[in-house]
Image 1 (tube, helix red, strand yellow):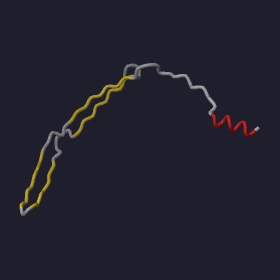
Image 2 (image 1 turned 90 degrees about the horizontal axis):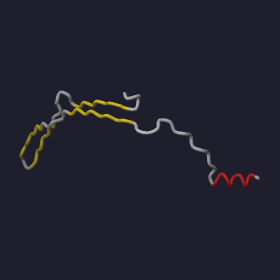
Image 3 (image 1 turned 90 degrees about the vertical axis):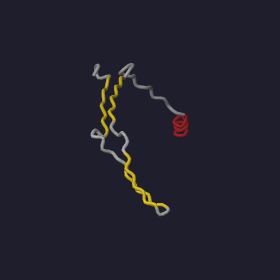
Image 4 (image 1 turned 120 degrees about the horizontal axis):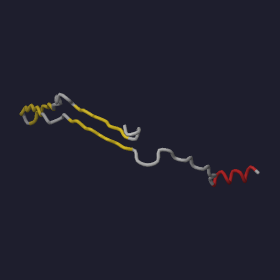
Length: 75
C-alpha cells in the first residue's frame, strides 16, 4: 500500500460477543452465583506509514579504546 510504505491491519476480537464471567461465592453460609456479561466484541482498524528515507548509508567502522590498547600490547 502506498509504494510499500503503508500498512493497514484489521483486528477483530470475540466477533459473536460470547465472553462471559461466571463465579460462585460461598461465605458466611451464603451461596451466591453470578453471571456477568460485558461488551467483549471489538474491531480495530490500524494504519501505519513509514516516513523518511528508505535507504540508510552504512555506518563507518570505528575502533574502540579496548582495540587500541590491544594493538599496543601486540606490538
